[in-house]
Length: 300
Image 1 (cartoon, helix red, strand yellow):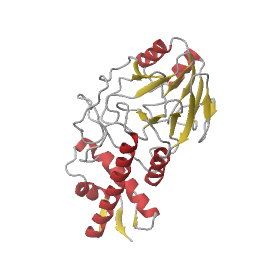
Image 2 (spheres, one colour):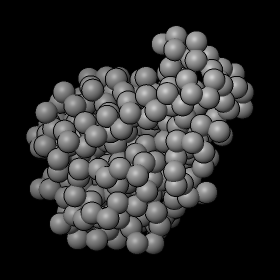
Image 3 (cartoon, rainbow, N blue to C red):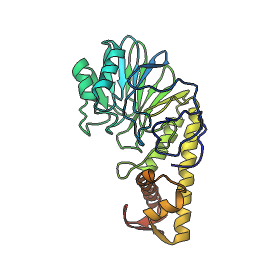
Image 4 (cartoon, rainbow, N blue to C red):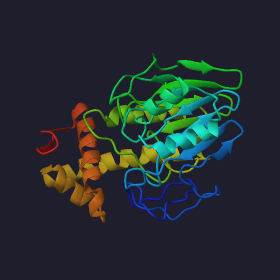
């Protein structure tokens, strides 16, 4: 949620805005389409669910990894047409299902896909209706004849968030940890800004060549985007701390009004969550104190 421009060459949806300002930059990829497989790399295909919104952009991306035996990452929402598109593209070869996290646009598609394929379901935890066959931990790997995928625990957007690192191509399936064309909403208490910044540094160290996000196009300059994410968050944190110094004390709604100019009214609830997460981080560092999402906050 910022008027600043990200460094990545991006394409934005013409029909539905992302959760931040629309960035008038473009990608060389063909346009995203709903429920049709698009080749991303020799090992990866993308199928975008038809669930556009101000939170999901054009829709949630499901990824198919492998050709002989297929891993599905984030089957998406509970949507029969989307599940059918995944099954059609995989041609009976789905062996594994992985979820980056259990938000409602990422994991509810699991039961239908598992029922059709018998695939092994893997994620950080059983939550939000998801039932796993295997709970993944940081560094766990899926090793196949075609590819190696490593789980990377990246709390911040959600406590149970995982990214998946495709070792063969140095591609990161980032879920909602990093999105193309948008910053990420951090909603306390499960969302944690301090953990989020640590997780950004963690994936920055992987020497990525690309990022395949759950929303938007493939990011081909990953380090520049991660650095922008980090600097944007730290600048926002400094801005909010400075506003509290000037104002003496304030509620979150007052800070949003002062910090986000201009801001589409539909984005105000997300801005409030973001400010709350920054304040909680500052409170953990002993710089501010306050009383939750509706209380008054002040500098210590």
